Image 1 (spheres, rainbow, N blue to C red):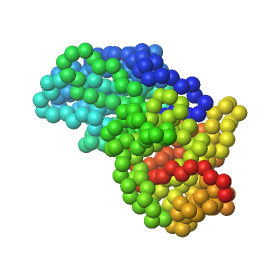
Image 2: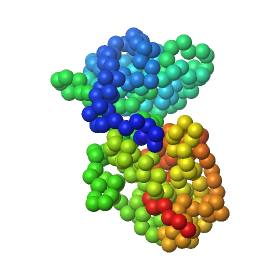
Image 3: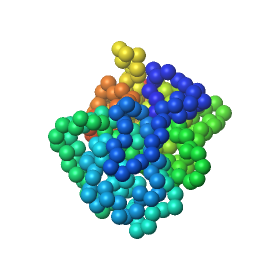
Image 4: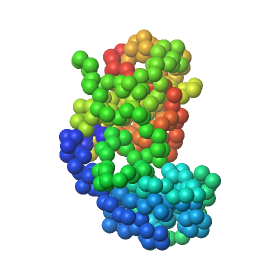
Length: 313
């Protein structure tokens, strides 16, 4: 997702730049992919189906170091087995896999873990190469390799994405709309209807700046709720670098803070009604998960959300 101050791009340019960014390689066992020259870029790897059987030597030898972020000499098939993107069976599948990797700098240490019935290894020594993480894994049918798709969500650790990320047309007099897949109303802590939290409701709705979520928060505050707490994410001004900054706060007594009370106090809420958890937040610091928000090392579980227009108390 984009932050206020970033340069907007049209949809065609965005798709073209993302396509230009992608580089295709073909997987071969025991051969380290040449990733160092593509730092922070997207690399597409085609994994032939003959290497996707359960008797894969790299999997048996646990030739994989790290969790989520792996060393570049980790075997890609073993990584896919560890992340759960692909389950190895006795016979190889008929179709190859097309895997999207994001190249990352070398980490100070790589911590192994057990996932999907497969354990990766630790590595605490210096690593002279680079790292990578898996962003996407698709069964590739015969034909040309499909180009990478423009996503309005930032890459994250979770592979759960909303079912509808196509551009939605807003109604008359509106800038933002609610995707049909996210139109699920529930009741919040003050017993009023609101939306069930969904990534589709916080994702940018277009590549144009007017429909970025960060732009929306210039005139609306976002209220997020966990099981017992309510949080306010509100615009607070512009940084010295020209980017918008935000404050993430916990709302006092959310059960009695219905919409009328909010508008009576003023939105964003005054300092007496909130406890500031993080101030001077840059939009790029916020990581949106399928059921949580992660900010500056803290993770906040989320169930509900509601946008409320700014008011004057």
